[in-house]
Image (tube, rainbow, N blue to C red):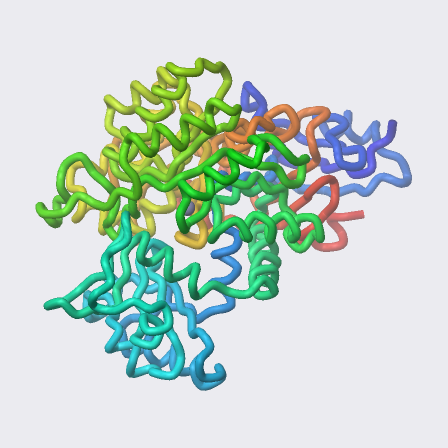
Length: 537
Ligand SMILES: [Zn+2]
């Protein structure tokens, strides 16, 4: 059998068990045919083989982002970008621009502000947004995706006024009895669902997201959810029509009413693993607490920055055990969004209870984020063989806030080194759009743990480059029960690769995030390529 494509003279980072590095790889159609020296691989080529001379560049298994929100990433691209605004006036101006080209009555949606980066040092209010328009409903989502601010028109359309009670797991922020327009957690999620984009817009957003992910070398995504059951159907449609090109493992949950969504999914008679190599039903997922940066995460001890606050819970231990226990019993993989140490502990407790009632090996139950994970919880994660899905890029994006909000507890935030020391398999995710989608950025932050302002966030938890690479490739495949078909460059596996513009193993760790993706190969096809014609013959 002759190769359809051969990659030679490279640094092939195989991510096999011994983390071996070799020179060349040959593929036949969509599968890996051989891995070895350039000479060995050349012997498998004939006149029809497409030859790619890597000239020393790295070729890795395609990145697997084990936690990202394709729909939110994509629809954010359709709205007003508030990521870089420096004050509320700037935000108002950007929203006003959108209002000028939007029919009255239609939604203006913005995303990405962080009150800590605004000159005013506060969230916008509904009065700020009313200055933009009282004819258009407006929603502006904070960078964490757990908090938003809306104007008076939005509140009116949603039928929310000063007499409305707070929903379970959420809050309408009030000042002397009046709504400020700020919505926390469940209150926010409910309103986003109310203000959601149309199917056509969401499909467009998914296509935009997929393209950006592809350009960053991501060939598989564990999609962490959107709003409601429609989200999963849209995602499936987008994958089938190839508007989303990646392989997708879909976490079965919703940002809005996750317990209800899980109940319906579990009751429908399907379970984790349904699907194919392109689209597969993943774990049942619920939300336990809020976000690390709000902060709204549920912590055992109050925040260092505010002794009266320790976060928001979406459900209690009984409900969590009940919802996820049922899913476990019926064969699902289970997972939960858990950031604060109290929330992480609750999820461990739920898994332990489920396993006691219905023992099962190789369950691969996960904890999304597993943000604050002190040593006692690490021991339990190890014993129960749970897979944490941390997001090191948070340390860059929000690390300065963590130091203020959590003090000494930063040493237990995303404790990758402790996971490794305890032989716990963990897979990395960007949680994009919450942080940048670039896996090399995540890998760098796993290695250096530096915040935006250059502070070291927990000096005992840095890991080596090869450990971070493994967590962004093989471990992602493991977390979706797919390590037999992807996650490493080994004979027989799917030909999903990323080619970088230099050697990742010899690069100065402080420049990892500056490495560029030159090529993304998915299912044996070159989907993205910035290589010159001379390199590809
Ligand atoms: Zn997420």
